Length: 477
View 1 (cartoon, one colour):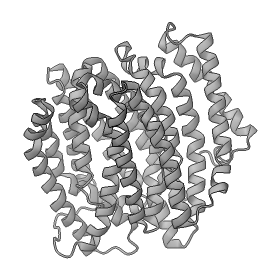
View 2 (tube, one colour):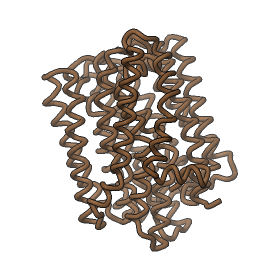
View 3 (cartoon, one colour):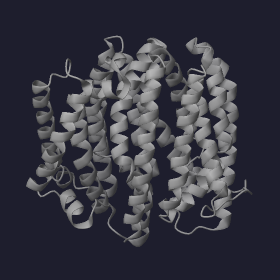
């Protein structure tokens, strides 16, 4: 078994189990907390999430990409991470009261303080995990991911039942980081470094600035509604929008998460070996879209019963949001691995420029659309999706000689499969009206009918994903 395929298997098992635990957490929390409570935490976590993109300053990806590693380079990466992560931790604690006053939400200051505490352990977790990922040794990451997710679930639910409300979500995050730290520290397979070097970190910082700014801007696109609606609307609206977006993001991220951690190590290794990166990128995209597009197409049609199963009837208003955003995520998946490709190719500046354009586009679209109506915000994401496809396709064609027509022609079968799956789901909705039928019954019917149809379509189109499943026992990059 190749090291890449073994890495995909362990990464997939780890990520899918983490997603299942996360789903359980989300379903429980959605039934225990109100939209206002979840909206309050969403505002705080959205802002902290944006700031947190700088806490590693790209050091982990630098270690994965670097051709030759020495202990000195690793300790410098640790030193840079300590400087940035600890500095941001103190910054978040300091700006908490100001953010609380700006949004007129007193609990934000305390939530900021709790979330900031996790920044002080981050460097001693991220560096060992990056070194393990570089070696494709995802087996040893399994325990850290699973145990930390279980800890977050247990702490969150326990504290909610003790009346800690939105603070429970913050303490659950801290528990996750703490368990990750303990596992990394006391598991012999993780290399540990405690003595950072703070001098001559400029090379890593240069790479990290591009990488961190890119990740910050990319996450800002996803949390833009929380930030804007939190100021222009109500926390209940923030909670409702975040549930709709969270549902489709959960589906998309779950399907992609198994392979995603392996993509950068794989492309970086391919670059060091002199292989054609565009061919590898296209193959990974075709395989992933064959899975993600049909699922999102089905979710777009069946958002109402799915939302009811996930979160309960009190979140019905999130269903139309989810239907629209599912299409946006399908558009975005087209170039999901583009940033990994640009990092492996040493094109960090082009990657950052792309995200700057998308960042300003989404904030302008959300601010302009919110006064029109709540659903208009979701439609603005469709506009963003089209902008992103055009922008990234042009960028890859210019920077890496992506053949545009060839790339999109190989994706046509994926589009047809997704459309057929959406039509079949609509037919099910006529047979079992989603508004009046039990949500579990409707989802059960979809789960029974759609997988055989999807598999039959893979066979009919002679899709490479079917060949991978048939002949290797599972898809691989």
